[in-house]
Length: 276
Image (cartoon, rainbow, N blue to C red; front, top):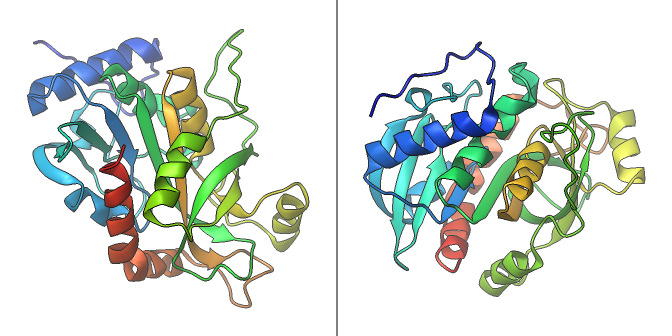
């Protein structure tokens, strides 16, 4: 198969064709023609990939058409094909593109479009985020029940109208609650970043209904819904948000909180995936 690679700066002229090309490349390299579940493992969640099942193949993410190496410390640059005990195949996308990287919303959505092109019907999106509920200490996983997109962008193009009423699947959240019935739920608000939110912005988000703030996930979730996938979103509270936390925010804090919670939340996520 002759596959041409897209450079990081070259525009994706037809995002769905590039996604199809990426899916074909993954199938060729992994030997797995069809994947059922796609996962994006954000800060703190990377260890789950070792617990989900048997790794069939590992592919450097930047070798897959349309993807690039991760730009953020704590994110793994390997795309993995994993066989779950149920016989299903999970695709762990190893290179999340954040909107703040400046590569455009098509690059952000590329992972979900690629996953759908591999056959995946379920998308599991995870992240590390700031918490607005002072009762949620760093290390607390929270199921996303809805989101607020504050990026002023959308992965949808032209007259493409997609209903987001039940974007975060109740069925999938019920499965997660079956694994851990203490999991809280919340509304996630995505800001553009890469700067952290100001205390006033955090209060604004709280007033309009947010429980969590971060810099990822919502655009991916919209792209997943457009592609026909069912979405499960889980946030890891890595810090209290600005104005709620008594200390200054730092990316090092996010990394450390993710490392501390990693083994526990990785087991949780692996158990959830095995039930999907």
